[in-house]
Length: 137
Image (cartoon, rainbow, N blue to C red; front, top):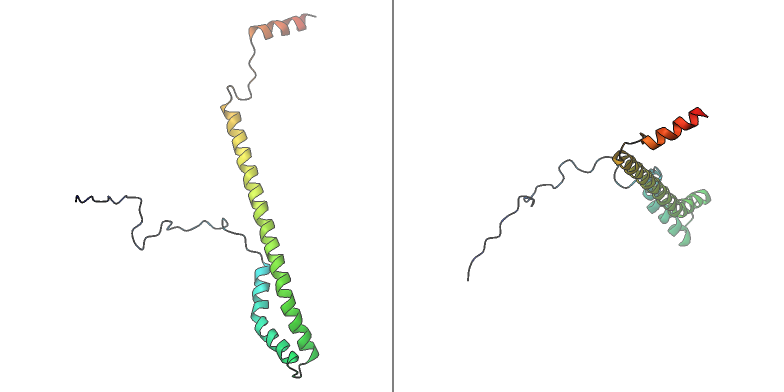
């Protein structure tokens, strides 16, 4: 049996080495809605709200306002989460549309620059003769 050595490519990462030491540039990741902070607050209150509802269902005496607030917290977690997802989706779609528009504009400008003469109109002697005839009339 012949032993073949596998050459280590210089592009392979060494153990513990990051492939992207600078990380992702800010603002290029998934957009995060400001509603997420509200959602976090509601999630922190969720367990206490569920405990209040369980106590009421078990027959314990729970203040009506506390129970109403507990129900509100639990029911609005889903609503706020949906709103946050919709906000993030809209922001992402707007960002993608703007990026596509910028790329299209850059492509169009590059194509214009490649055209011979750019915006300069070229006249041949035939054009010059026609213009001279128009001037004489």
